[in-house]
Length: 334
Length: 246
Image 1: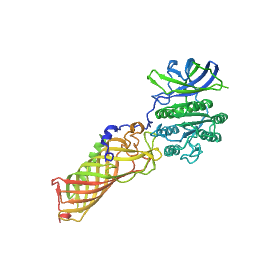
Image 2: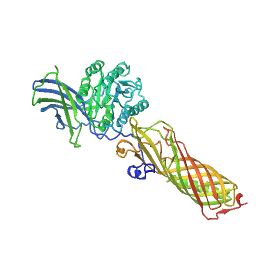
Image 3: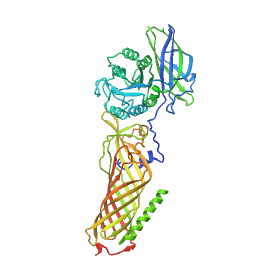
Image 4: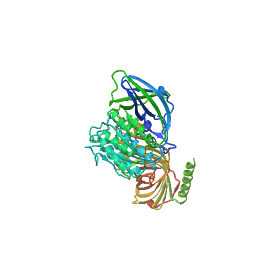
């Protein structure tokens, strides 16, 4: 009966007198997020590795901006034990892409989001993203899993038409919350999504965005195969991982090798922030910090063919807040 | 302020019309309690006005108490003319609604979110009735008309069924703006059955139906059913013998 009676108490607690409502829409709260724009091997010897990375730091307070006031002291590098030296540091605007984009957003539907996104904020965040995309840019939303509840495996799309149908796609995204389950096969799904983009006659700048919350142990398609196909077709693969499970080095490498961005979100609030800015990150202006880093391991040698995972830590002295770690995977050529 | 002036002008006008033509004029007080309500959104999914949420519509049933209540206190000016009567009831209405929507969370799991709306409003019911079945004590009547509502204060809130849910973080309490409510005056159709007790007062059963939806995006209907109790003041404003005193 308590819930049935009119919530005078609830009104007192949560109610708001409305005088001048705006048309603005709000997302759930967000947290600080930094992303990897690029990461690449530069050179190595048996006692050192030199690599470069570009980091994007999203503005916490305002949408549509990156933090542009950080300096080199605000960046720390962590990873294998050794000595890290920032050899060069630059901060600059990236040019706005000239060509319109066609984007496929692929959602990992495997398992359960009970731990990583218990209130399904991803649906709200993705709904904002698809509303942000306006022509001539186009988008399509799909879902990926095996042995789950999808109608088609490993890739389900409600339509192959890149028609920017906001209502249909929005409804589809919310319905997906009822159909999580099965195992992760995001690389298989990505492989088919790449085919969709290749077959699309629309905008020439093609983008694939993966939202992943589990490791992919079930795909028949290899990471190298996805990278090869994406690079052959000139498609950037952006990866957003959610929670502690997805292995950063695999998905960071996928993004690095295809020219995509990589966001390792430890919470749903960080994921919401990334989606709130995703359209701009794909089609709009960005401000990046470019670092050239020398790493000298304290023990052992740098062997050809080995992979090294580093983490860039960002601290904003103005807000006195830390950001999430930005993983950078560096592979030493064989 | 302009709205209040407009209401007062209408009241004075209607009062003068009744005073001119009435065979009997009664002035009284009315107390109404409308507790059986139905709020119906005629769409399977509702998109929040101030968030990016989509809610599932699952429950459009009539509800006793839990869909909201209206508590009305007002004055009554009634004119009897033969078997007919006309009434104007300027009233204060504490009008609440409660509507439950569902947010998809996981397979087989939806978050139940009850959106509450509270209006303080001035109601001007204006209706005409036909009396029959006269005895010395009791008469019956049916009546129909309209209720013109002028909200002047609005509060809204929502309540999640999950107590541990940090609900304000994840959902927007203003999402039903222009769906379940707006800030505009509105009209209701009114239909009722009344039991009159000599010149003492009357009890009525009344049904109200809101004309039009608060917003244009989703068709929403509001049905309300309740009781009214009216006491006539012992004033001899005008009295002629009319049909039930013959």
